[in-house]
Image (tube, helix red, strand yellow):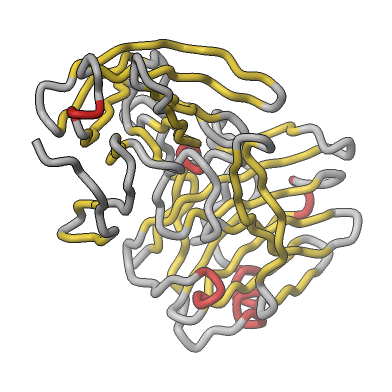
Length: 307
């Protein structure tokens, strides 16, 4: 059999091919991948001439800040230059945020080895999926001031359990926060614009934080990174220079232009969404959905842009 030398990284009809001169090429899973069930399958290619026993051993570890524990180990036999193998069952529906899996492999009888990660899990068939809000359609000519006037007498706005209402038009998404329901707390609203429901925060995921102390809002998102020494890192960045806010005694009104979210809105579009309330000591007191985790969009709920 001819040795596999190198592969050019392209994307053809959704099939990934990766650049490498290695004797073992892992095609799946890949770093930052979210598994959709607890079966850990590995797809790979290998130069069997470089495998003395035609075998590769895989070890899977669970990492959390400052800790790592081995979950399983399995040795597979290569009968051909490519294959797909079940390494084991992970026995969990969700793992992500500041926790992750790493997959280490080595070729018995050689010094060939490598590690890939992070890998997460978000089994959407088992995780709670909840529509938290409906965003009411308002006139396309409406600006934030118009929404403030409209909200005074409207019986159509739907308020969730955290005191947040949503509206939209083709120009912006509008948030309405009822102050009486977040008094003495900080409210963080998480948006997964493309409703990807992944195990790790991505650059596209956005947060709006409202502080009752300063009566102000701030937009943030995160740049993520990973290496074997530091593990997972999320660096906070500010976003939303065109976000507008109006406050009165009862409510806070926020306008977010759609280009700030990187979306083109349309009727019945669904966005990932979660709400987190913190007390004055920054302890999480309420989350919507109840099982939502801030750093794991796969656990968030959603809202829909009404007709």
